[in-house]
Length: 164
Image 1 (cartoon, one colour):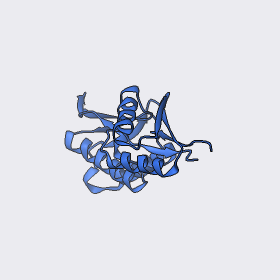
Image 2 (cartoon, one colour):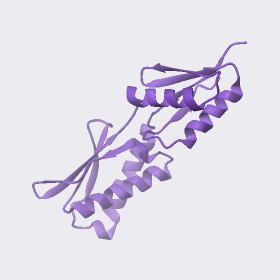
Image 3 (tube, rainbow, N blue to C red):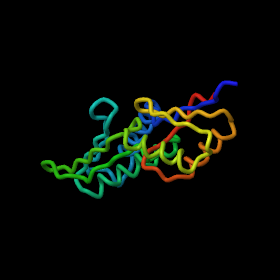
């Protein structure tokens, strides 16, 4: 019998992220507490980062909170966000939030070690670029690995794909 396997990836649903950003733009434009603060949010660098501008540090953080709220409602993990501190740029405060996608080597090795040390014995994990392939002869063992990783508090958002 062939091995069963699945992939562990860290991907962002860019359509949902874009929808969350558009909803945030709309809400910032309509809310009374943002009137006259110059608060705005927009993509920067394609869809790799978001730039928030406002006339105070508190307003910039408030826009970020609205964006986080919209991401959660759209089913995206907040672990994809890597926010800097608001920096004064001229009259405005600018806040750059980078979106993290893909599993870097450091996290891939950490996940692989967790599977090796705490997972069932017959399970193998291979690093393939920005994803991991986990394989085993028994499907139940793969289910155990998924449950194990969901229980861990890792700094990156994980999705489990290509389960076969």
